[in-house]
Amino acid sequence: MNPLSKSELFAIVKMLAYDNAIIFTKHARERMNERKFNIYEVKDILMNPRQYVEARYDESKGYTYKIKGGKKRFASIVLSINNENTMVIVVTVI
Image (tube, rainbow, N blue to C red):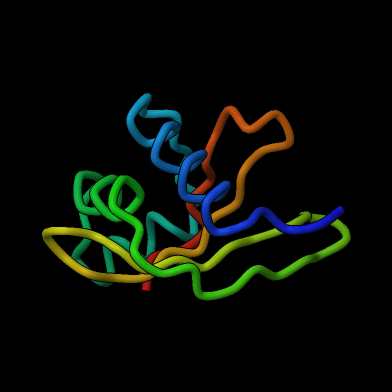
């Protein structure tokens, strides 16, 4: 299985963010709190991606993607997409 292309990833992430189909891992919530990010800022990053930094593959977890974006606060997010492309899972906020 190949990683999503930049255009595929951005289209899916924007659509899911628009639909509020976002899950935050415990780690993501801890990093958000530590780095003073709120849910709306993270959603802004997801809806306004600007850079596709990298894709990493783990046999047990599949692909994770690091993107940068945001209109209000430019930052990086590591995320994954579930197998059905119906949910974006925020792994961490940097």
